[in-house]
Image 1 (tube, one colour):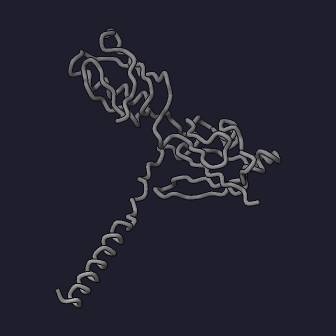
Image 2 (image 1 turned 180 degrees about the vertical axis):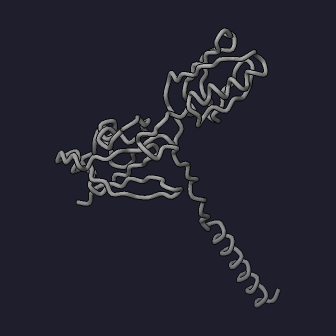
Length: 212
């Protein structure tokens, strides 16, 4: 075989391998996480919404056979003795009671339903998440009129490496994520109560590490 031809084949093969390696090492960007804003925009208008993992007690008056305790599935539904799939996540207990009454009206005469929540988890959109240099970073169930101080107590305060005055609060407003500076060191270490702020469902607190 001609040496020049053989050399050309080697060059072509080498280029082919380079293309394969380059293709394998290409980093594809995943889409940004979908925003799921809370329904609560004002601290005085908060209503608890049912979420996956909640334990519901559904009482149907004069119909104990369809009453009972139900755990909300990861898909936000429950299964009852009469209806296999009922969408419950994202509704208030009162809204769910009225919805179940409409569903059961097909089987029962004028059903009267009461829904209570026995174990609270709630949707992710209603939880407050604390990440970074908190002593116990985690998600917290929102409680009406909860403040930054309440949240920091629940996560055990800051670590010794935290830069609390460079912390950021991320909040969804009008469909957009907005960032606000919060002064956690001033609140916790200096007792500056003016640094305390109202929290809303869905807020995210990011606490960075200090640069020494």
